[in-house]
Length: 117
Image (cartoon, one colour):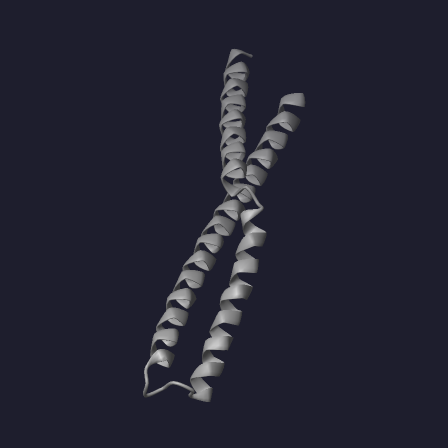
């Protein structure tokens, strides 16, 4: 009877570890996407600055507001990125991987002990 409870417990732990590992992977990819978006908006802002500096467009109020808006967007993305930089995703992923290995090792040992009975 106790091995049934232990087996169920190990299955539940395994599922939770798998779920957490998937969540961490999603967060990691989300962080990478934010960094990519930040880089793209930064490049766009530089391009706008170059256009605004041209004699033809210098002083154009629409371009000036667009530059301000792009710089604001970059600033917001940087603060958003800083929130995720504080989370040590790689360390968390490594610890989840280690827990997964331990759980699978324990499951294998438990199967071996069942065979001996």
